[in-house]
Length: 216
Image 1 (cartoon, rainbow, N blue to C red):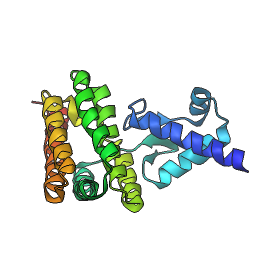
Image 2: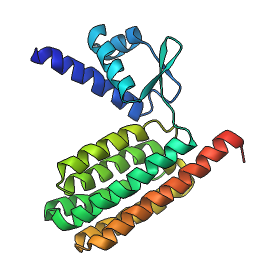
Image 3: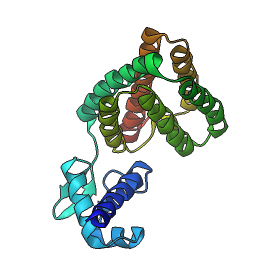
Image 4: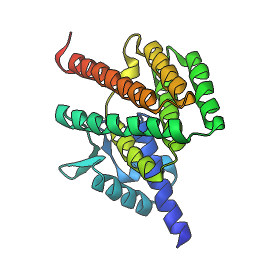
């Protein structure tokens, strides 16, 4: 029984990671047999993983096929509204509860991520690690769970806001401000810095989305 549960979890995690990393993008069709071959997993756990992802609205039906879902303008706005508040709360709690070691890791992340400027895909992965560390540093398991759900839905966006010209440099400066506030144990400043960071990212993403759909 444990082995079956492990296979199901692995299949789910593998597909989710493939969506998150852009291997499968919004609108792409997912075929059970192809996924089983790609990941070296039998079709039963793949089928169950697909059903789970559909239940979570990460996949949707297109006739008889399952495709990676996409977010319309209103859904994206709703997602960012929730994300902004939850991320701000995570920063506030991190300023209150983070260990000195966690703060040190956050500081090192900001420094190390500067080497990734110019590589939007690598910077996007580093950005997810940075935010995840803040979530964990909040030391609130229920908040972490809710943010995990939010970030799964973020994978349904076709592009990263970090792909915008100059956004990487600005984002890292914003990360530095967030870490500085957490390090000072300034809860209000940490909350505001992270909320502002998400707000700027949302504006950037709206501009990218408008360019993709309607041209310059």
